[in-house]
Each structure stands twice: as structure tokens, then as C-alpha cells.
Length: 398
Image: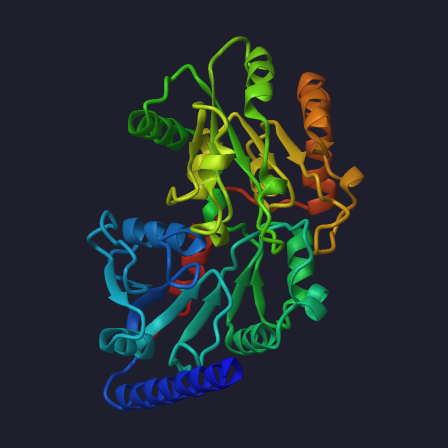
């Protein structure tokens, strides 16, 4: 009976996609590609964020002649988004018109054209900006045996229609060429979401806004704990005894009060009881906060595990510590041995306390600079959105 239900669901889904693509074909007969129209989406149409957001904000301020449209799933709150941005619902009639007429389509994750009712037209340019830069965890072709058939098909179709990918370092450029089934152009000028790290006045503005929203003292130090996603379903790898750790953190911060931002992976929203991880009143759940980069900008220390946020945060040259109790069990391979990384690793609660107590900032910064420059070949200069916009302007319909 269960197998029959799956088959019916699969068949119904296919019928819906056939209908959607038929409607898309009808729309394409009626609309032309519009010069300067940019259609964006992020994280499967669920968020206004990441690289598409930072590109959008640069275009709004510098190229007001370009029309910016964002796509969201039904039920996603779009209040607070700049009024200059047009918002449409995924798979709506208005969406079909936009996906058929946009000159540029911009996203941060894999997309199967068939699933989104899109048939690329000769005048259209598709920019897949991805959602990370340098990586510790193996991705794409390097873990092909662990990826499902549907994802592999989507990824390969996505790369076939892609006109541009971006990179912020030599290591990431090599990764894209080797593992993304992609042979097109790579713009090696940085990734837009990291431009904010080079804008210190913006950091102060964000901190003031967050202080006001969450009742945080300007003198407090912020420690962000941002573990990555695990498929195991258990909550145990995310646990930290904050009652024991906070006094030590306070001591290392010169006696200042310490606030902890708990930032879980978006895939865990609604699946993990975050309250059980907030073992102190000083821990604030920031999992649903709209922008990870803003949280990194205001954090005085980052504790993570395998997340690529460590590489983003490294550009701020602030302390980053890795806390991972399941290094041997984690189901993804690594591009670097942990000993190669400049970030100290703790594999238990006791080790975490030792690492914090013995943290040597000067030695850390020396290791960090060597890693960024020699191992990664960092290219970030805070101009990624500018260079990406320049690329788009040069290729606009005449």
C-alpha cells in the first residue's frame, strides 16, 4: 500500500511538472526577454539572503535602470524587503512570465530547469553563485557515491545551462573546475556576501541594530556557535555545556559579559529542539536570523565544526575554534587534514575548555595568514558584487 502511494505521488508530481512546463511554453510565445530584468532566488526559494541578496543590494544602489525580481515559496514572509524589489510566488502565473523574460537568472544553489518550468532562451544568462567559498567538507563529484540520483541529475543539468560561477580563492576555483561538472567561465573576484567583511562602518551599524533588537549591552562580547548539518538526526553533536564554558569565556574576554548566538543549519529548522541547547540564559537562538554574514560581522569569536563559515570568518582575523565530537563518524570526507587548518580543534567538552584557556592570538594570526595566502590563495578584496555587476552590464542585450 505504501509503495502504491509513493507511485501515485510520483505520477501526480510528474503530471504537475508537465502541465507547468506546457504553461511555460505558452508564456514564452507571448513574452520577450527584457533587457536588464534580473530574477533571483536563494535556498530553494525560502530566504532573501546569501550571494543573490548582496548582488541585489549593489545593483539597486548603482544601477537603478535594472529591474530586480525575487522568487519565494508560498508562506515565506517578504515583509521588510526593499520596496524596489518585486516579489513573486514560485510557480505562479507571474513567476512563469518572469522566468521566461528575465535576462539574468541568479541563484545560490542547484536548480533543475525542468522542475522550475524554465527553458533557457538564447538571450538569457544564468549565474549560479553557490552558497559557499572554500570548503572543508567534500562536495559534488567528490562525494558522488553519497548523493542521490535526483540530486546528481539536477546538478548536472544545472551546470549544463550555467553561464557563470564565482570564486573567492584559488582553491575554490580549482574545486569548481574539478568537481562541479562545469566547464564554463569562473569569475575569481570574490563572492558578494563576503564584501561586508571589508566594510567596518557597516559592522558597527549592524551591531547597534542587533543590540537594540535583542537587548544586548554594547560592552558584551558575542560568541557565535554555528555547527553544520548532520544527517544522523541526533542532537548530541550540537551540545555544549554553556554553564561550564561561560565563566571561562568571560575570563578570556577581560571580565566582560558574554552572549552566545546559537546558529543551527537551516536544514534543522523545525527538526531540532533548540531550547534543549540553550542551557544558559546567555544563549540566544539566532537560527532564523535572516543573514549569517551579519552575525559573523558582530561576533568576537566563532565556534563551529565542519562549516565553511570558518573560512568566511577568517577574513575578519578573529578567533575561530572547531568543536567536533564526531570527526571519525561524520559522513563526508574532508579536503584538508585538521592539522593543516589554522583553527584549533577540540573533540570533547574538556578539550574545548583547554583550547579556549590556552588560546594564543598572536600564533593563531600567523597560522591564519599563511593558510589564507598560501593554501587558499585568497582573492577577496570587498569588490565581488561590483565586479559581478560589471560582468552583467557588459553582457546586457544591446
